[in-house]
Image (cartoon, rainbow over all chains, first blue to last red; front, top):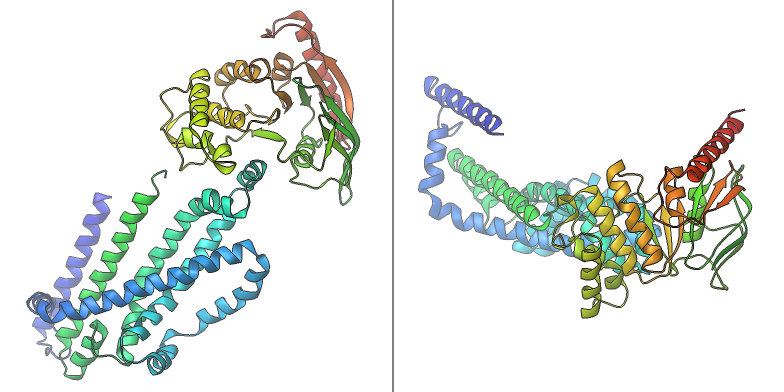
Length: 245
Length: 248
């Protein structure tokens, strides 16, 4: 564990040194590729500019997660309790996944405006699928002997859901949530690219137009740190909730 | 009394049960032994209602029922404890699912924990205790069902020999102290002879009763008892014959 951590750290360091060296050696102009040190500097010194934008993007992702949970949990439960619903809905679910969110973004901006709502929905659309599918998989994975035991106790579907299926599916749910939060940033940022007045995606587009490539990289750095942070957060939450593993 | 009469079940071409009948007297202990694949498990599936029977009657205390769901409690080879609940919460599960936990129920469970040597482990999760303790906890849960009839499906076969031996006496408590009626499937002929009042030897599918042995000697018994040793030899020979018969 420690060793692999050192290896990955060393790998990052090597990449950064090569990058830095290349830029300095060939005197690559700032507006093409800034040096890592310049990116790091601006990421820190311009915190006052980056932070409000990052907060907006984070809020969009958070609300997107909440929204998708509000839809995907009831949907997974419904699909599990009624296989006919699953059969009817799953083709649409799969088809919806083959539509690139990039294609939806302009429409959502037209329908929901330049504000936060269209980005929240974008993030929610992306997160929704992995959570629904993994939760449903978790419900289905529940051992049939346990179901028999609960039936012998006289437990109906909702009792089984509360005491058996739901806790059983929690590890699956968290696996889906982890995938969800890491890709959620994509949805939010694409939404911001298409049309917005704030957020890290907006900052990227603005900086790009003004050839402030260093700021574009700074926004990317903040974004990836945010993704990492959320992933860690879900991990901590998972360990708190699932104590028996 | 548990009475099963003329039970039929077929899966496509395979006739598993063809007019199978069996009775277990109230507070009796009957063990079924048979070659693997003879249909014992299907028989239990029919009893618990997991699989629907084709034909036949099942009755408990003179009342005919579709299956024993709601009548019997069930204990399997796997302890089926929920890994996220403490041993105490696992034991209280039947009550929680039923009418809800009341003060008296928890007291009762605590007393059973003491009786079965689980005192002090009420708060542990199943992953932290041994297989024998888990199976004891499953037994407490079975007792919390408040049902007179108990179906045992190879309840101890996943345990090591020493643990199994110590749990034999616990199973006997079910009959003597808790006045349960027990029907057990087992692979272990010794176990059947040590615990049961009647040992039923089954034939290959379609499952029929090949022979039944009434055991009247007092329990706890010792397997070194010459009468039991003779029976054990006899039963093993019969089971061997059934297997050979199947191979031909």
